[in-house]
Length: 319
Image (cartoon, rainbow, N blue to C red; front, top):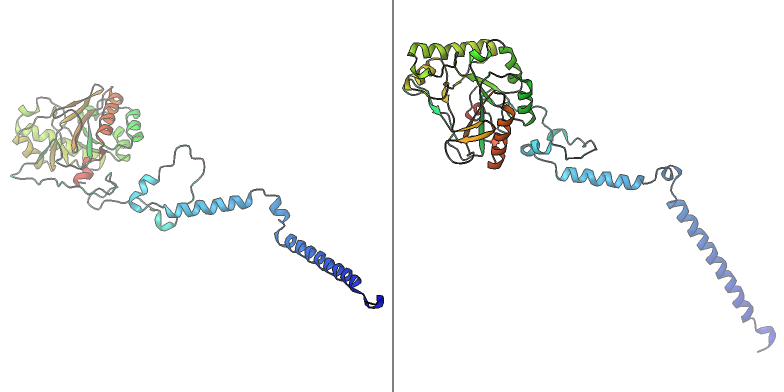
């Protein structure tokens, strides 16, 4: 081919140069586009981990929502996890109770936590109140009752509050007459005061009917005047009772005699039946110097039996 017609090497070099120039332009354009869209701002660079933190917060919020307890399980969820250092985020307003629920039957916030009792207090029959030594139920409940009022210490109330226990207090006037106001703090803490006679005469069953009635009605009147609530339960000193006493209790306006089959005493537990606490047991304690040891013995037995401490008046639905 003639020299003046052979131009392929020049054309090839030209095309190569043009292709290289285009490639360089495309690469430069791509680098600029990436830098413009993905380069962090100065504010983002000054807050290391901000994106990670935002993601963690979003995940935690989703987890809280997914596992938000229902109203029936709210009490368990309200206890913070051990060692928690962060303040939990408040959930939706509709899932948080604004006030404790009052039992319409008793007019007070009860200790049942939604439990529906399967036993009803028997009525007065033939002019005599029923006698309770144990509640016949298989529900996992136990009832603490504390007698007399001879020893008065703030520390005993503090122990009950520490363990979230409310009890029925069977007080005798002979033990509390000098300082009845001391027990106002028990009432404020949700305990209820019941009748244990005026004089705590251990020979009570041998008194005349008139004397028995005077002891029972007199203490009911005294407690109503001092504490603003008339007692609904009576416990005879030492525990024994007669049909006449059952009649006197009814005539004084009360609903039942409450005795026991289990007792916390001298730092241990005494059982009239069996070797441990049973569902429905009514437990006797006293305001004595050994109160802390007795309460510890009761709590150990209660936990071993898997029972919940419930206020007797709540379970029986009495005011």
